[in-house]
Amino acid sequence: QVFTAWACVQMQAMGPQDVIINGYPLFHVAGTLPGSLAALSCGVETIIPTTGLYRNRAVLQNFWKLVEKYRVTTLSAVPTVLAALAQVPLAGADISSVRYCRTGAAILPPELAARFERDYGLHIHESLGMTEMAGISTITPLGVHGLPGCVGFRLPHTQMRIVALNADGGASDRDVAPGEPGMVLFKSPNVFSGFLDERDNANAFTPDGWLVTGDLGYIDRDERLNLSGRAKDLIIRSGHNIDPKTIEDAIGAHPAVQLAAAVGAPDAYAGELPVVFATLRPGAQVSEAELLAFTAERVDEGPAKPRHVYLIEHMPVTNVGKIYKPELRAQAAGHTARELIAALCQPLPADQQPRVHSTEAGGVVVHLPAGAPDALADQLQAALAPLPVKTRVVRD
Image (cartoon, helix red, strand yellow):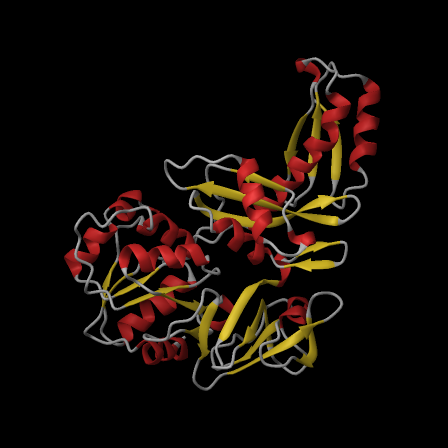
């Protein structure tokens, strides 16, 4: 923890001249270590924006006024919070005191980065942090401008390497060439010593002690780490690995889209098919068909072109504002099940139509009304059985 605080101060040139707004939850590593301990260790004035933090809508609606009032010099927020702030006009607020803007926890959508540059004159510096490294792994310092996905340099006194994926999608022992993507590994003074349950350490560390982050990326010619996504978020279509970021960047370029997340929907033949969930900017209107066509035009690989675009009102997020993809994968499984059973149940009256809901584990449960034909349960189970997720048909 001390090393994390020291490294943040060194790489961000923090000091008593700075004022920050710490809106991260203080039960989370980002709010506690890079957010609080680093600032307190070097005399930075820290503003806590109410007990609700960034989850307080009034804080977001008045954010630029807060920046002006306290002459804030450093902004830090996850991409979902930045997306919300991008909808808040300056309304004459003077934010010239801001010299550094940082994000982490998830990859920054290129369109969101461009909006901040265009509307506020702020370049967003990305970083990589994880709880297993006491909150920080790489930092993009002030004055270093990278493309979206560039999360900066390794910390002093740390080691970083990129290795090829093995057959199971984990870390192999083969280092890749500079510029070639693979799994990101670290050795550092702030790497944790391991899990209490020894069985959990098998996938967390390589046999020679490197921390396996689960992040995919490459090192560029300036020795900066560039991320493309998480290994567990890869969409695997008939053995073809699809990076969801490719799809998310494509649909995110549409002016009506606020946030987007691509996941794999279960498919009996291909295993997974790419689909996208998107929220729209306030007041924007666009059809799912238009977004699907727009995205398909900007995705070069045929297998990566999404099959569906689902418009949702709110993007599911964790307590710290990360997009929660397990919930979206569960929703995608539910949509797939509804498509499969629609033809079977179309002739039935409304009071006999089954209801479909997704489980937290990504499975599907189909509820049959009491008046539905007995044979329908077997027909539905047979239709759903080929899907690579757990399915169950129950009678209410």
